[in-house]
Every structure is written in structure tokens, then in C-alpha cells.
Image 1: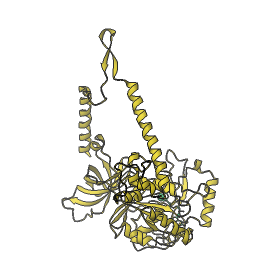
Image 2: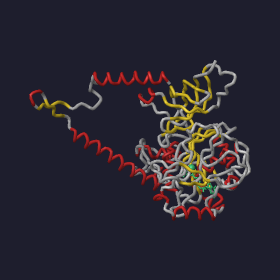
Image 3: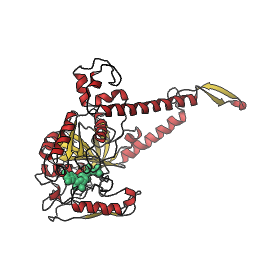
Image 4: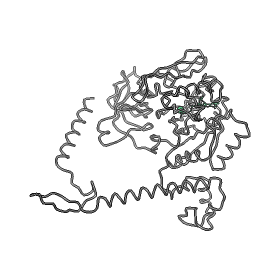
Length: 465
Ligand SMILES: Nc1nc2c(ncn2[C@@H]2O[C@H](COP(=O)(O)OP(=O)(O)OP(=O)(O)O)[C@@H](O)[C@H]2O)c(=O)[nH]1
Ligand SMILES: [Mg+2]
């Protein structure tokens, strides 16, 4: 019997396709099939789209209509999620690894705090990696690690050049589904590549991959040259090649790494320019020097840090779920952005500062619902925490946003009023109460009929798949 239904996890998503790794079958497989661990290129059932059921990277899904020969299938159902992040949009994550660099770009408490807050707002455990340890003096590195530790986080110093900290990170990520986030250029993709190669018993340091580390003299040169060329107004498209993760090929090199060539050489790749890209762009890839890479291994693209603006160039463009062999861990590489947006109530802010949370949990703040701002005798306010001024600043920002939202809402209500005029027969105008949209209004028979017709068509389309 040939298996045509299975369960799997969405590893990558783009446009109308998702790439699903199969991990359980419904029914028996035929002897000549090896469906487990297969990656299938899948469409999403039209009915799911109709009910606005999004299919996210990380989702566990039920597949039907599987064609093992062509490697295709259809997502019929999204299984219940244990968590869902909005930015990046990923499901079933249970840990966040925030990557900052000690230098290039330099570690700065204020932007770092905003990244930490946006991770905290997802109510997930957070670990911090301080990357590029090779670029700073031991003393300087220790100071940053101490600072982050004093905020209440586990901080792991890492260098993808020397390999320091990679074993510790492997342990931190073991058995977890981790989203890796942080500023562009901090080295998220480099760390992920290094960990994945390490998990296969290969050398994943930048040297071995022949990628140029930040701070390398020729890297500065290359970055300057790119900047000087004015690469489409600072919008560097490096590293986009092959990032869709949905190409359907089992053994496709994703972000620069190629199937084994055995040679430590730079490789150029090309990609058709998308609508926003100005024609074809070339980019530098990474190749594991003299190492036998499994043909199915897809490494992430690694970009340069701009010497001019001191930031990364947003090399990673898509959210992708990647496996760490042996440790059972899954990691999600994400595009770095410059400043994460904070979108939660000001009253919740203190809970996203672990050092404040600890003080309150130890019942050292006597006031219920205390905002730790103006309340006299509040121990949190008087504890002289290093990040307290940042807390006050961000609290004020969130309050302004809340006030603006409330004003907008009130003026919308005022504008609309509670009565509306309606034309009656004979050109008469009459007043009637304005109902809250879509609350009291009855759906017209025509729309019901139209919806049913569309539904029948979708069901027929799915059945024909
Ligand atoms: N010196 C040094 N350079 C590093 C290290 N890790 C990464 N780099 C370099 O930092 C630059 C940016 O690395 P990426 O891995 O592309 O950074 P990213 O965080 O994924 O960036 P985005 O995808 O743009 O968000 C590259 O030139 C890497 O070679 C490190 O530990 N030491
Ligand atoms: Mg990246």
C-alpha cells in the first residue's frame, strides 16, 4: 500500500508553498519508499486559506495527496500550536537565543535592551550570545558578559573564528526549538552554520568555511568597495540567492554553501533580480574547506558588516527552520532588523525586565499594581538598577503610544457618531441608529450564497488535487 497521508513540520515557507519534513506516516509505506525524513514541497489547501488559517514555519501539519515520486503534497490541517511569535512569524518555538556582537557592531545596552524586551514579550526563556569574542580584549568581553548577566540572563561568549563557546551553545540548544534573533551582522547565521557543521563532526569556524570574519583586513576592503559602489541606496541584496528554502530539491545548496568540491575557494552565485532588485547581483559564498559536506546540507548565507554604517546588511531574508543533528535541537534563523518594535501595554513592561521581576517576586515591592515609577518607597525604584533609566524611558514611550491609540479610537467614534442618515423611498432622508459594524448586522442572502458557491468550488479544487 502506498502512503498518501502523513504528519510533518514546516521547515520553510514562501508565497503559496511550504516545505514540510515528514516525521510520521498514516498507513504503511511501500517497500521501495523511504518517506520518513523526506521533505515535500506542499501547497496549502484552499479551504485553510479561506478560513484564514495561516501556515507558519514551525507548524506541525497533516499532509494528504502525497506524491512521493515528485516529492509533493497538500497541507490539510494545522495541528495545535504550543506558541506563536509575531515577529518573526514562527510557531512552536520554546526558546529565544539573542545574538549580539562584542564589536562590529559594538554592544550597546539600549538597543540590546529593546531586543531583549521584544523577546521577553513572547514569554519565552531567553539566552544571550555575545559573539565576535575574538575582536575584543578579554577584559572588555568579560565586562559585557558581566553586564548582561547582571540583568538576569545567561550570557555565553562566542567566537565563530576560534570556536569558543560553541560547545556551550550546543548544550543550551539541545532538544529545544530556538529562534535566533538579534541585530543584522551580529553573526546569527555564522553561529548557526558553525553549530550545524559541528553537530556533523565538521569544523564550522569561519576560517574552515573560508568566510571572511568581521575585522579581517580584506573584509573591510570588500565592504568599503560595496559601499562605495552605492549598492542600490544601501539596500544590499547579498545573500538572497536560494533563500526561499522552497526550491523542492533535496540536495540544493541554500545560502552559499555548495555540495562538496573539496576546494577552499570562493564561489560566486547569481540570482535573478526580484521586483525590488536591480538586475542580477553577485555575492560571495562560503565553502567548507576540504571537508566532505553531506549533499543535503544547506548552509545559511553570511554577509559583511558595512564599515561605513557599522551594521550588517540584512543578509538573511527569510525565516527558516534548521536541524542540529544529534542534539535533537531545531533553530530558526531570522533576518536581523535594526530596531524591533515594542508592542505591549506599558503596565506590563516591568515584567520583561528579569532584574525587576526578581525583586518583585521576592516580595520586596509592597504595592499592588505598582508601576515602579512615582510610588514613594517602592524598592524597585530605589534599587538603583542599571537599566532603570531605560525602563522609565521606554515606559514613557509606551504610554505615549497608548494615549495616541486611545485618541485615535475616540475621534473615530466621534466622527462616526451614533446616528446615520439613510435615504428612504420618495427621496426622504431618515435617521437610524448606527450599529457596530459586523456585530448586529445580518449577513445578506446574496453574500451567503456567494460564500457557499466559493466554498463548493474550493472543495472541488482540493478534491481534484
Ligand atoms: N571576527 C568575527 N567575525 C564574525 C564572527 N561571526 C560572524 N562574523 C562575521 O560577521 C559578519 C556577519 O555575519 P552573519 O552571520 O551574516 O550575521 P547575521 O547576524 O546573520 O546578519 P543578518 O543575516 O544580516 O541578520 C560576517 O562577515 C561574518 O563572517 C566572529 O565570531 N568573529
Ligand atoms: Mg543572517
